[in-house]
Structure formats: structure tokens, C-alpha cells
Length: 512
Image (cartoon, rainbow, N blue to C red; front, side, top):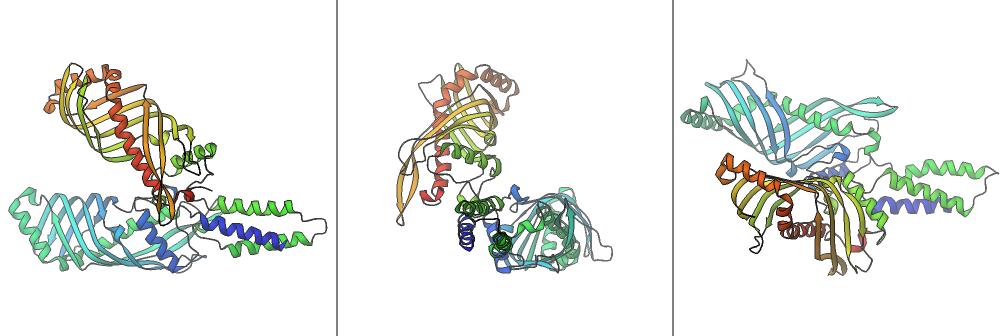
């Protein structure tokens, strides 16, 4: 029986050690691990992680941030900010991360330094600053340098469905910058002279001004931080954020198994040993899901299931394995070159492109991914809807119609069948084999395409409407003429996307 438990323990070691979870976990109160975990979040998950209710960290959006007037202060102002964007958190250097005890007792604290913190938003300002009356509304930017901070809180136990969750209370924030620079646009109804003078005055006296508004600003920001961290801890029971040590886990189950051994009616067989091993293996994989699905080489049902898991649980990307966000899918540029021999003879240049709809892909085929990298690799399936948005530049002729413009565009494709295939090329690096993509080919066929190009012909409303109507009345002819160029452009995008994923680690490490 002890041998059976040893084998189970060994497999548990492999299962828990080889496949890191989607989010860092530590033992309760393990400060060194908490510091490392926080650094991992800032490095790999600053765009957020919906799976654990972690909101985006960088940039950090705040709907509103209000600092109340203090009549007894020489800086007696109402400051109301909305549509706020805070930048700089991803460069945080955390020096202290204490607390998070198993019984939730005691104070919890995070402290460190932010090299640069920028707060941008729409402001409304009214009151007096030292001897200067001040009033305005518009855009503002507040830059803080070398901000030392200390944020602390208590946990309160909340029972839900028989399990214990953690809520935050008694929050306290302290922060001290080395320097603050203010800029408020459109002060005094946009009077340029008064605006410049006032901003110069604020920055010449930044220390006195900041320290007067610091209590109100600290209170406002601490409530935002409380809401952010509380949302994270609301996601699941408190205990599930932490590793239960394998020793503790096995100690409980070892005693249960030893009790079973002492019962005369139970005979231990190899099958029972295998069952226990399998059970613990299930717990290892099921209790702590891996950061990314793994399959055996060429196992098509598993590959399709794994791809579905990615689309369901990892649409925001997984930095740990170089998987970029899937939906929305962003592209800097997407260009379709002119074909002089075609009746649709246009240059189409798109930039700042957002593609939406990939999360609803239905995969029907995922073949290849052989151990020796040989043969063709194919992904095929269908999409209900795909929308491409971005800034465009368009110049040329479409059938009999000259067309020209630049502005915003939207292209909607319905019921798309697609087939993307490629070959692998072996690349040796540091004595290990990596996989690079070559000979990529994309084929796709929609049931319908709808075009909309804003600001055609320098914004002529009549020409713009008639041109868009013409494009949509003849969508099939137009689409099939630009299809080869568009397929080539998108094929190169997918090659880069999948290639980046496979460049992350040796090919063999992607498989069981």
C-alpha cells in the first residue's frame, strides 16, 4: 500500500510540476512566492485575465475619480475626473507583500515603487489654490515620478454556499511621489494666457498643492484599489487561491488508505493501486487546470477539443505560451495589393485593425502535428460572423466605378468556411528542435459580405452612399476579385500568429 501511495505521489509531482496553472499560486503567507507571483502578473497578465476576474492593470481605466473640497485647506477645490486612464502600473517594483494567512487574520500589505505614473482624463475643477482662484473643464494630465506606496487592508470572512470567501475592509493607502507635474487644458474657458500662467503656478508650487489634496486623492484611489482587489477575491472561495501542499494533501489521504488496509475484507490488488494513482492524477489535473491544453502527436479529436478550450477560456491570450489575444484580434496593418489585370483594381491599405468573431469558430478538422513534423498541417471549420474594422486608404477602380477615400471602414462577413494549412520546418536552437511555419495557404468562402467605407471622395455624402450601395449590390464579384490578395495577406498574419506560438519552446514540449 505504501508503494501505491509512493507511485501516486510521484505522478502527482509530475502532474503538478510539469503544467503550470493559468495564474500563479502560493502557499498562504509565503511572501517570497507572493512577490514572485505579483511580478509574474505584472509581466504576463497586465491586460487582465477574465478566468480569475483580474481586470486590466495597464492601462488601468477608472470611470470617475473625485477629490472633495476641503474648506479648511489653502487648496480648497472640487476636482472631478471622469473617463480616467492610469498608466505605469506594469513597471511597479514590489518590495513587500505580507499577509494572506490561511485564517485571514492580521493585516495584509503590498508596498513598492512606481517609477512613473500618469493619470489622464476629463476634468471639472472649481475653487481656490493658495491665493489663486481656479476654474475649468477639459482634458488633464497628472504625472507622478518615483511614487512610493503602501496599500493595506483586512479580510472579512463571507460565507456563501457553505464556502468561505474573502471581502476587503479597513483599507488604507499611503503614497509619496518625488515630483508631480500638472497640466489642465481649457482653464478659464480656454483663455490661453490664464491657462499657461495657472499651470505654471501649479507646477512651481506642486509640493504644497499635492500635499494639500493628498488626503482626498488617497481616499479616492484607495476605494478604487479596494474595488479592484475585492472583485478578484469574489471570484472563488479564499482557499482556492492557494496551493495545498502535496504533503498535506497526501497526509490526509494516506491515513484514509491506511485505515482501509487494516480492514480484513479489503484486498489490495494492482488494479486498486492503479485506481488510486488515477484518482490522484485526476485531482492533480482537474483541481489545478494547466495553463494550456496538451495532446499526443497527431491526436485529432484531442487537438479539436484543445482548440475549443483555447477559444472558450483563453481568448485574451496566454503570455506564458506566447499566445496572443484571439478575440478581439488586433493588427497594425493589413494590405491588399493592386491587381492591374482585375476589374477590381484597387490598393487597399488598412491600419489599426480590429477583427472580431474568432471566439465563435466551429472547428471541424485539425490534422497533422506529427512527431517528426512531416506532412501537411490543416485547420478547417466555419465562422458565423467575422467583422474587420480599422482605418483605411483606398484608391483605384471597382468594376466600372472609380473609387478613392480614407477614413474608417467596416467589413462584415457571414457564414465563412475556411481552411488554413502549412508545413513545418525544423529549426535547431541550443541543441533542441523548434518548429517554424512555411508554405502557408488560406482558403475562405463567405455566404455574404457587407462593406462600409466612411469618408469616401473627401466625405461627399451622396457619392459615399451610392458607392457603398454599389459595393454591396455587387459584393460577390468584388469580394472574389480581391479574395486572392486578401487570402495572402491574412495567411501571412496567421503564419506570424501561429509561428510566434511555436517559437516559444521546443516542439516536443507542446505534446504529452
